[in-house]
Length: 66
Image (cartoon, rainbow, N blue to C red; front, top):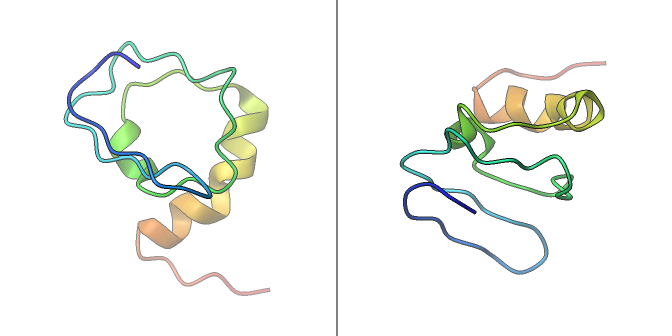
């Protein structure tokens, strides 16, 4: 992965990037990832974006309700 420093945790990636611009994550599995808000500028597929919705909302401080 190109960009600034990053960290990776077992059982799902945990991102803490200083720069993700130019990173192509379209072939990556991001379902259990944390730190998604630090991926600004990275490329993901529409399916990945839809799957990341709840995690992104939680990281942004939104309360998810049914």
